Image (cartoon, rainbow over all chains, first blue to last red; front, side):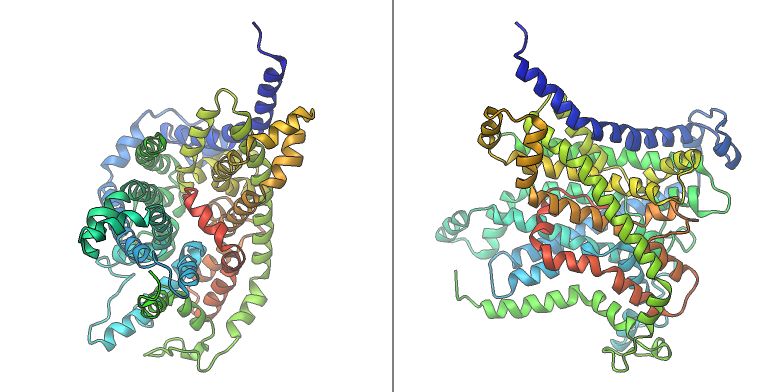
Amino acid sequence: MAAPPGRARRRWAAWAFLAPVTVYLVVFYAYPLYRNLDLSLRDYTVRSFVEGNAPFAGLDHYRGVVRDPSFGPALWHTTVFTAVSIAFQFAIGLGLAVFFRRHFPLSRTLRALFLVPWLLPLIVSASTWSWMLNSESGVVNSVLQRLGGSPINWLTSPRWALASVTIANIWIGIPFNLVLLHSGLEGIPASIEEAAALDGAGPWQRFWRVTFPMLRPVSAITLLLGLIYTLKVFDIVWIMTRGGPADSSSTLATWSYRLGFGNMLPAFSPGAAVGNLLIVMALMFGLIYIRVQRRQDAP
Amino acid sequence: MTGRAPRWKTGVGVLLTAVMLFPIYWMVNVSLTRGQDMRKSPPDWVPLHATLDGYRAVLDQQLPYLGTSIVIGLGTVALTLVLAAPAGYALAKLRPAGAGALGFVLLIAQMIPAVIMAMGFYAIYLAVGALNTLPGLIVADSTIAVPFGVLVFTAFMSGIPPEVVEAAEVDGAGALRIFWSIILPLSRNAIITVSLFAFLWAWSDFVFASTLDQGGELQPITLGIYRYIGNNNQEWNAIMATAVVASIPATVLLLVAQRYVAAGITAGAVKD
């Protein structure tokens, strides 16, 4: 039996509505990614970039970037930057979410104000932090000196550059963690904790034994989204240090950009290879995220 | 639970907020500082000798950048809505075979770093001559917002009761009519959320602008600020004044649409 005409028409209508976004995804997502892959598998120079006749190079560029002396540091900095950022963002976000859990006068307004760092253009945050961390005239060193410490070359010494961009990134990511964890806490019924309180559990015990385990699904989502988001952070690092001094704060994202766009003579092919490695990493965590989310949505 | 030391909590809350927002206060403070006080040690904690020199520099030098950013932002909003709203309707209400796969692709698309997309776009734009053009930059910026927009519209429109649509179908309305006269008017909140974020992300974009519009005649404000810093400019009051002005959309957004912002973040927004 053929499908009723209404249903067939509906199916056509559905795809008519989906056609624009499908075409868009193919042309403006799939095609640039394909071009990126093509870039990494051929020997592109500035000339062949224009003429489009670059010779096939196979996996040479991938081998090249992995053996490059810049690769190890970039991978290590990406790992440290991501892990430290997420750990602090999550811990501070969780603390604030618990603090804002019970309403008090002004709590709604203050919680809204906490969102500001997340909404500012990254170039605004990055340039503000750059000036605050300026060695001679920055407010941070001024406070350090008043407290009896000695000034630190935050952005210009290889020892501190990565720490500086990490601090700025933590500041930007706190609101995101606060909002997600706060809405997660709102979803936990107060009656459960009250029951635990009746059983004689103190506030500390109540939180770690009852509330925190119940918050685990939201925590997992928050951490995974944070991971995907932090892996691809580029603006902050590039604007504050350009990955320097001497590669001391370079990540895979800034290295890829520097290879492709940061030098007088662009190295598109190695740049694309680094970028594709980063995509593979982001997608790995992305798939884990989707799995976790699906499992939570299932009853 | 009322009456248990809420005042004490408000005090701590204000203190925490002040610490968190200190960099923003500092940006405003520096933007009002006189040139000769810029390297004073210790710095002035409040703008005692406030000057508007920095803002005068913004008016003199940055207006074209700001105008360009507004055009790019509005263009990105329009493109995102036109693509995302119909798709959300189809995924939420018409559910054709393959809808699940498309939803999956959108989730994945959200995770691809813009800095990597930029290189592919550069290669394509170079070939078709779209480098340094506003439509080119608008299309690239929209890739940040379109997957998010479809997901928000789908989630929101799924919440519209099926009876509403069924009643219209009984009256003989087609899919287009239902979408235009019933679903869209009911989706006002989703439209606002998506528009706000699309505008904000396009306004804030630095990656696409710095790669695809390096040599453009019309450049957005993010490049305006970057130029300022890059030229080893020592007039930090002017740089910070530009930063303050560039923060206005975010501030307005928070003032007028706070609940949409929180809704947008919880919708799983992955910001670039």
